[in-house]
Length: 246
Image (cartoon, rainbow, N blue to C red; front, side, top):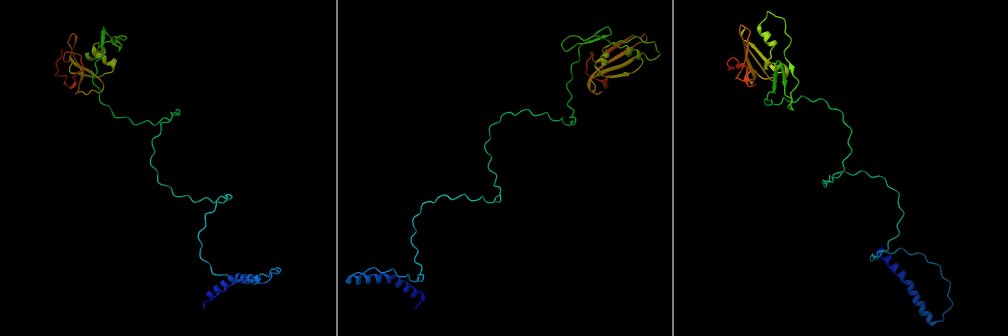
């Protein structure tokens, strides 16, 4: 017979034996007069552990126990990986204007910019002569201080007559010295000379020159005629020999 089975039968008999003894004792006591109760006998030896019974049903959930004491602080954990960037939030309201910052250091000088286009030809300044004195009109319509363009008379010389004419030139060509025009002079002979002035940088082939032809005779009389019949800055210096003068 299986030892485990035998052990189970003995355990069952041992468990049932006290009950059988009580029943028999009760039955015998009914027939006899009950005597005084005897002393409690010694506890018998502990029997062998019986087989494990079947798992009982789960009991009801007990009430929550009291909160325990706070434990010690644990060690700092390892930093986790960075998460992905979130979406850009809505634009916030503009903040208040901050205080003006300190003036920064002066930057290095930049490279020169490209040369701009040439401006349109301006009108010649209004002027008037009083003998050998020249006056220019101011922007406000008034006249500036007269400037005497004739110097003191020099000693007679043996050079060309043209030098004397240029030195004592009181014609409109003397405006060159006052407004700093570019100047051209071409002495063709002892009796004919061409003279012109224009804004600095005007090419000889450009129509921006004011040209005159000056002639002299044996008596020393000097005559000046203008190209095209007017002292205008609209002639070409390269064409001075073929232009009509009056």
